[in-house]
Image (cartoon, rainbow, N blue to C red; front, side, top):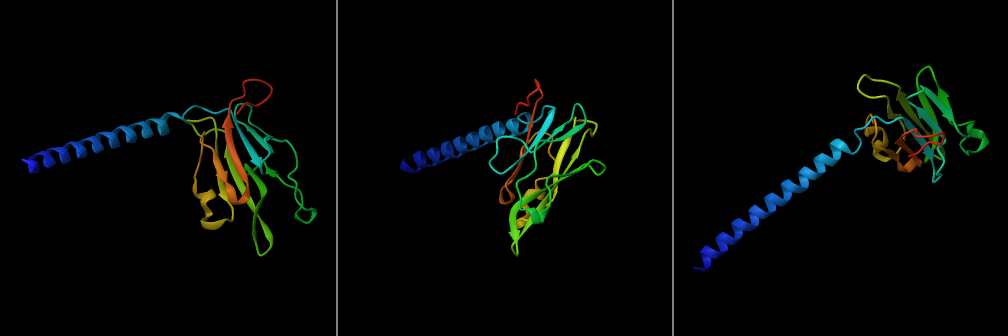
Length: 163
């Protein structure tokens, strides 16, 4: 009698775990599909802990605006460097190799057919190169922690950019 109850209890436990797993998995998939699916109007690139973007990419007006120069030692030159022809933005990251700070290159596109625009970190030096492995983003934030650079998407509801 005890064996029958244990078997029945084990089957219910397994069934409950399967249902719970399917429910959590479904919610996760729905979130991934819809959370960052809207067409974003701007991408703001931040350096360090600043709440002001260092560069703004406006996908609606096809403009890239440098807000201020990155605070770096003079021997490195001026950053960010914006290359309109290749659609890249180069910043100086905080990650060092042999005492030399490494660059982070961000490539953007204004339109790719489905979306207004996209952003991708195409070059950087950091442990395991996690930043450049994130791939192309059309709304999902990109974060490069060893270099203290992040890209956040938002809308252009007014003169000030809202993120």
